[in-house]
Length: 594
Ligand SMILES: *[C@@H]1O[C@H](CO)[C@@H](O)[C@H](O)[C@H]1NC(C)=O
Ligand SMILES: *[C@@H]1O[C@H](CO)[C@@H](O)[C@H](O)[C@H]1NC(C)=O
Ligand SMILES: *[C@@H]1O[C@H](CO)[C@@H](O)[C@H](O)[C@H]1NC(C)=O
Image (cartoon, rainbow, N blue to C red; front, side, top):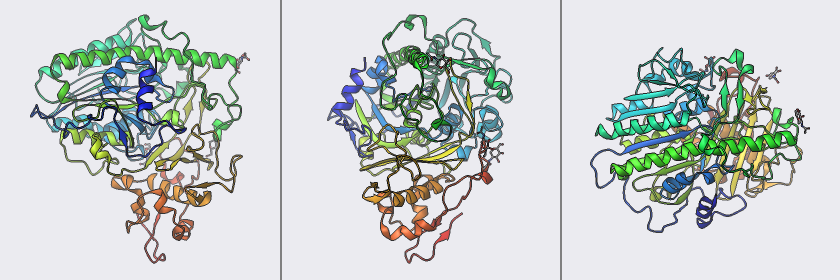
């Protein structure tokens, strides 16, 4: 197990101590002739291309889950491109999914949680997105649209018809409180009442439904969008997760695989990377207070990890079935297939019990694989991309003009497009609590509210964050790929002689902070080109440009990112300064932009 993916990556020559931090723009295909097949539209068909989007729940890339999925390797990794620098911007199911299907950051959807008042399906509806999100737009462009599996959290057997989800030709949604109940799932088709499938495994049902939807889609002879959203490898949840007042009663146990997979990988364990249950505490705030995990927890977490890999085998079979059907029906050449997850996951890294919601690589970096016409086979792209870029990417495939309220940029699927420089930054944001999952979990950690910036370019690879208690983190992933040494001033691993890109740390921090100040409330193209807000005269595109000494005074005058208090949602008056100054050439007329 695991050899195929590792071989691809090694062949691609990405083998430094910081494996994924190469030049953000280069993609290195295995097959030199790959990726030369021409433009996005296929030659053989005049019909717009089809799109299939497979969205798993809580699937990591950092713990090597893809190594255990032979069909994903065969159909997607070997025949498509893996975007190895792909990030989510809010590491939590519902906000991340709303961002995916609207093309906007959570601070622009204000769906920031899994439950009301700050999130969930009711908040999605209240924000007006039910009339205004991807399936609705694709239908307007002539697509038939299909969905099965989990759409959002707090989408329940009580509120599913108030109102019904719009935009789908056919839908069959998993509903709370049964969404994550692997053996008693509730599915709800079109406008029909929900059905609870007692004792049946959620993935077997989803495979049947997916195949039937694909058959319908193909028979319709229109271009189609088909989204398949299994719950694996999410925890099995018993109790009403959509009732926040009762959240302490909800149990998050390990995922439940199909019977035929329950004995696989008996020796698999969480990879023993340097950040696995480290001797010294990690991070800041509640994370820094976590005790080292004892043997009981480590063993449980290894078991939890194996159950994740086993539960993913059903998804792997789903993938194989979809490709077989596409091939048999002659649709493979005119279909783009995406494979990704709503957020990553940690199990024992940084002393954390199973969970997500943190800004570490484990939680924000996710698998993102695309196969389709013109896309290089067996390739790995280092372009820096995010879930905010997905809606614009699908628009480009469907030939729809981009919307002004998109906060992202279409992902360069073809190699030639990747030669153009792409942005280096990822804007990460989070509000509310984190929860420990697994049998020893259940603890909620409040005040898990933070803003963060992930930035990757030639010779730099950084993570910077500001928490609602005004603690800071700065990790230099070039020398510290596992984020174990917080080098922000005032923390144990700070050293005033440290430099990044030849500049003293303090100069780098000033720039990162101002960039984060712009990004945390950006809209539209500002989110894509944040340096232009700081330097409207256009002479700064990337971090190294901004590091010039001549800008020191300007950056010293900027307000710093800070919070006035911790809130569980996007309450602007708790979030400190909102506006950044702009630099103009004579260096005096700095001005506010609004
Ligand atoms: C590990 O810690 C948990 C929680 O504190 C405790 O219940 C358990 O007994 C401990 N196990 C060992 C082997 O110390
Ligand atoms: C969260 O932060 C607020 C200050 O913003 C503080 O009053 C409260 O005690 C904190 N809660 C926890 C659980 O730490
Ligand atoms: C986001 O939604 C919450 C809950 O409805 C509300 O209190 C808050 O003011 C909203 N934030 C913004 C920026 O609109």
